[in-house]
Image 1 (spheres, one colour):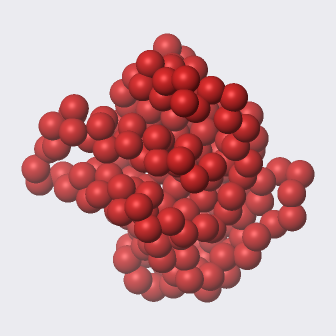
Image 2 (spheres, one colour; image 1 turned 90 degrees about the vertical axis):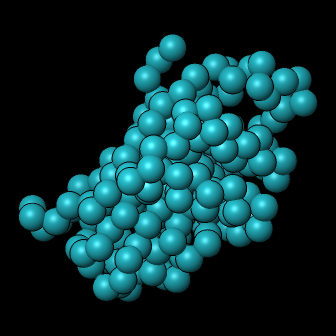
Length: 176
């Protein structure tokens, strides 16, 4: 299996880092959680060979995200907003977060590696990018995955975290 891509963060201030940044991979899925305590500006980029789904708990004073070739979308109050970008596309942007606890959870999934799990129901799906959207059911699943990834005091059973990540992928195809 090829390694799935992760969201790349580059802080504009050299001393600024993510308070927590964890990543876990399973067959066809990579999940990443980042918690940013500092209001430090950062740039981000994802150029992957898998689908990208992010749940944002961010408040931005300024910033934007762009799927390359499309018009940039301004940030703002992104609490409980999500972004989906299909494989083969690139997103990049920058953020100036407010001075609050800001987090985001990313799930990258490769449908070809998850063929058995996704089954024929999702064959032929031609998903489109969707920046900063809301969906209550998918949002609940992504918040749950974020909590599992953030809790470094109590390791989560691998099968449980993998199942929640797979559920997020399946729910994304439900609304794509």
